[in-house]
Length: 314
Image 1 (tube, rainbow, N blue to C red):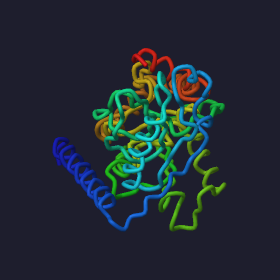
Image 2: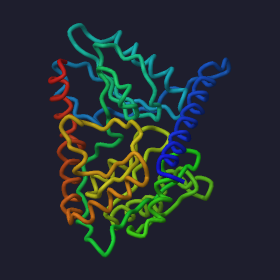
Image 3: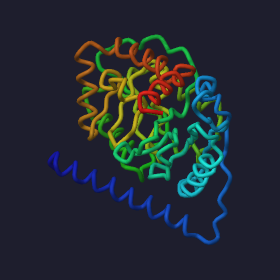
């Protein structure tokens, strides 16, 4: 099969998946029996430093998240309208949402929405990417090189989605690259005895990142990855296939210097090999940690976000 045929086949899988998810959303929205749940919430201070925003902005005190795709789109739009309506005169509302939903939302032109998951090509004025975690942490010591680049992954593949498994398969078969993959049955190893918060699973996940130079950080159900931000903070290099992802502060961060990203699994594999051959892999790990601390962790994320909002005319 030629490269063009492989690319066409992968693109077809992506489009099919998107159609299935869209149909699922519409079915959920139109269900007369649905009972829309209230969101899980967390204090905004767990993600942002509220003080810098007080003068010009009305910052929602809670970060909201819905458990399932489709429920969320309806409730998110309700939340945006409610927050806009109660915003004091002369201020701009800021709403923060952590959710897998990546489709369009009803963001008012004079309103800020921080969201984890969206498509870059559909991003509206007022929409900004929110890292799903901004907790400050110290990076691991640099992982030294060996004879081959070492790529890790600990988690579920979700074979029904066209991102993780194709890249894992590509890297497994590439003789230039060593891999250290721990494949789980599902989210938090669900279906195989795993439970949310399991300390053994967390330890395996963290150790896998620590002991490899690169970590597979492809998206899951949403167009983002917790693993991406955790990998950067740990001082390791994220690798992923591109799917119209929106990354924070792309105007300021040259992501080509800290991640490996490609339109196809083959491009990602070649990118890993190129970084390895350049001899830059240890310096790149240090840059990952530096960028994470400067832009993506508290309190600096809030400082940079405020700079960007001011530059954008808010």
